[in-house]
Image 1 (cartoon, rainbow, N blue to C red):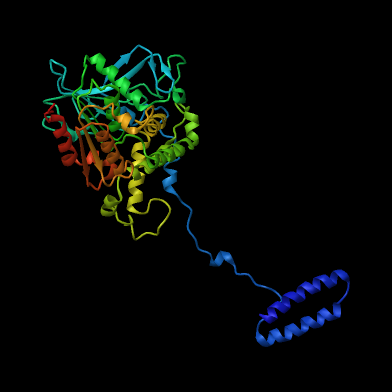
Image 2 (image 1 turned 90 degrees about the vertical axis):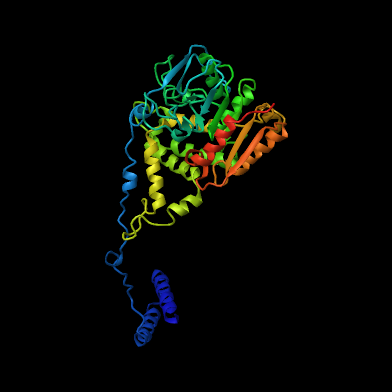
Length: 451
């Protein structure tokens, strides 16, 4: 170390003295002295030899097929690709009257796509409105006009939770959606172009009002029940709040009385991901491009919130897809592959702008809005209510259903029933746990109400 320091100082001193024109003999003597000592120690060499990096470096090959698959723009039209398989076999309700939205927008006319099962009785007293979640169509159950399985296939039919031997079930695609109902992908009659992001901001109240216009058209004054999960559960609560004399009972599964900040945060990130895709083009992508990557990645984030850690630990663990290969940055673990497949499955089957509108409507939901307290807000709901929550739900945490049930009871609704399910499937339990969810729903719908 002493020799190394001395050698460095010698080179520095040599540079200075050469500039001054002095010190030549002194510097030369000092270098000779250092060289003799270095030779004895086997240390000093006037030149530093650097290793040849091209011979010693070995790294990864930068190849990312998982990104290459996302570089395509997807279907140019919002009604191409998987849309054609989804939006078929429905009926259309058209209203020629101006529709006023909660946040100030107006459409000169609206249309709702809906499907129905069972028979409406002579008294028109056995109708059930089935409200949809964020990205669901009106196709909840297969039928002759569309034999493909619906999103609640196992819950609807003779003897099932929504017993079509007893009830007439109606399910509509929400306003702002993309499966036949008026939404951003529809043509604005005033311009001849898609509404895109000029479509009025949508609220849960708007969804409910549009569906009760449909009930008016069908000649149904009072519905036996309103049923929904997630966003659908929020619609069912709002239906009974807005129309307390027209709703006989409520089923709300994995929903809430007001949105939780964690849920808002998840959906905010999803929207930011989607809007950051260059192909989104401020929502004006129709006929030009399609934000495939944004939709894909937003769905991956969403999928994380729909299921639970306990299920994934049981289903995937930390297992890799192919342990015999070297790890890389594309899907390597089984859970990563699952998320990628879910993103790919969804990314071209739903309109990106509809996703922005409907997810924002969920975030703005708050039954205390316009009231002094949440208790006062839910006091508008006077019929029997079934509240179902799932302990493993991370998108709508169980405390949100507990709060809803407690506030309903505090408001004076003594006919509030609350169940907690210990399912490992998280938020998606309402689609998967046919036995527990189905039995609770069926019992509530068919029970005799004692006045």
